[in-house]
Amino acid sequence: MTTIGTAAITRRGLLGAFAATAVVAAPSASNAFGFLRGAGDIRRIRMYSGRTGEMLDTIYWIEGEYIPEALDEINHFMRDWRNNRHRAIDPRTVDIAAAAHRLMDTSEPYMLLSGYRSPETNAMLRSRSRGVAKDSLHLKGQAADLRLKSRSVSQMYRAATACNAGGVGKYSRSNFVHMDCGPVRTWGG
Image (tube, rainbow, N blue to C red; front, top):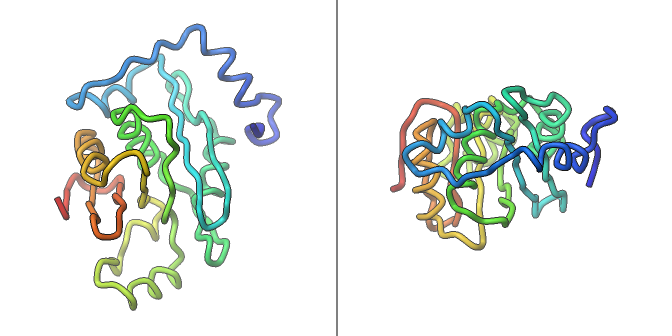
């Protein structure tokens, strides 16, 4: 486990401090996003990158407050791995991914395929695929393309859609789900 930034607080310490008081109930599909917005909860995101070999397991929100050091970790982890550029990831995107993960009731971390994309990377991907938007929310740090081995693309898509909190794209042939904090919309379903 790594520490959160340079603060004297570690993730393990935070977990220990709040484990006794946190009661984590599985939210129903109808209130998944609302559950994350409720007071008294802890928000955690777990991901790994097959491209960089990095793992991320962090509590990024406690008792109504985002933890800046944890958000910095997320920003670094979700950087454009092709050129090592990063941008602030919109915490709402992380909230949607965390809510969908909770709904799927799995301990497996997400595999991050794409978080922030630099304009150069987006243009390169766009030249190779019709499925890459010119003004992609990845360029703004507002989207993530995610995969789970233990859940189907359809299961992930349904969980993210149940959050009713942003855009959700189902890419069955490529085996991933796109989640973003833009307007509520779906495609590929």
